[in-house]
Amino acid sequence: MSNNTIQLSTGMRNTLLSLQQTNNLLNTTSERLATGKKVNSALDNALS
Image 1 (cartoon, rainbow, N blue to C red):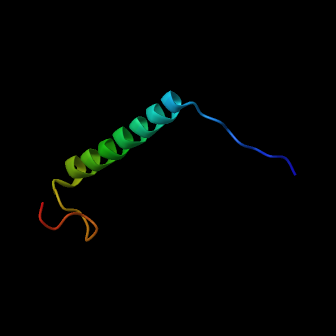
Image 2: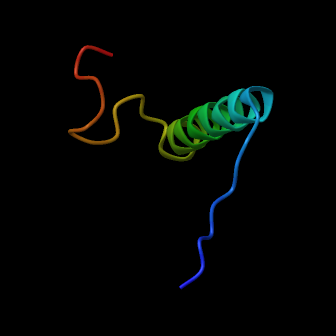
Image 3: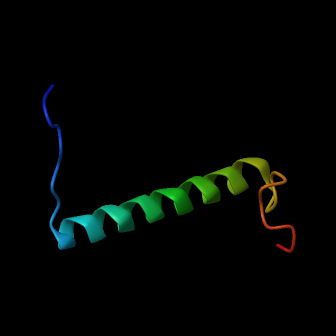
């Protein structure tokens, strides 16, 4: 069994986290634009 690990530097890890957050925001915005709704499901913030 091989040990498949990827080591990331702090800068690379921070960049990856930033890209993931940007992707999440993009997905949320795309869903809002597609549906015309700010709250699309029960999981969304009910106060929005």
